[in-house]
Image (cartoon, rainbow, N blue to C red; front, side):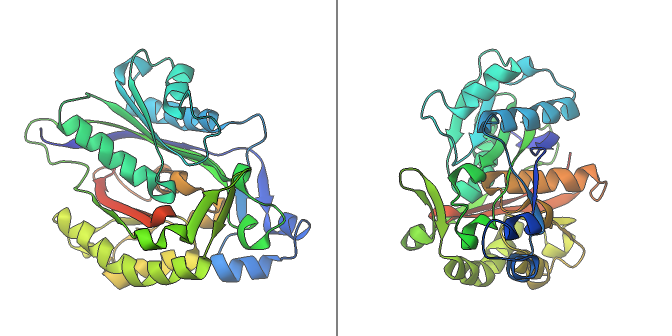
Length: 315
């Protein structure tokens, strides 16, 4: 097959906004401390009656509407998440039920913060192989449910939300809208980002992740561009996992993406794990900062320590 392309995108965040000032009343922190270290100003927090699949379904419904498609057009649902409470039914089947998708292949994928870019590549490969005709790919996480709200080193980081895309095969002769994936992991650093224990709690070795990201991400990002046959200067946008503004902002300059808009959604949304890349891309498109057909580098990294990136064409 000729590959696939994104034809619709959407995102969703819960209504409740938690500010740095709110956090200062909960733990020993303040706005200056948080902004200087990670750049976050606010984050959205889901309530106890807002499960992961509900966040995912809201984003997916918007992506379907943007694509001008009904639910019965989808035959593959892939949800990237690491915060599902139940083992079965999985999030993908619950989202399919909420949206009325009749009989899709439905699978969850857990690669934590790199989940969406892994899921997008998996769905692209599935369409290329002819095993599906149209896919809904979602990144959704409720990080607030796995956070220790007495730990100021982690509770200031997290937010909840979801982002989704609809992908379909390219027409004959059409250039692929989703480039080849560059993915991998650093197993010896697997404990650098964790969601473990009972009850499950998020923890990380922040300095280790920061050093890895600032040193190793630039050459990996350049390689993802090479796989797509583009120079970094050709990129219209760079959309990294929204973990830390101090990681995000220098990357475009380091790889030579001199003409790119850099997604900075971490400032308003915090670290939303698998939701962060599609949500940040969706917002850039919604605000008109990217036009249809323009190339954007997507790159997720985090837990395991895993990474995945690809260049996509905006819908």
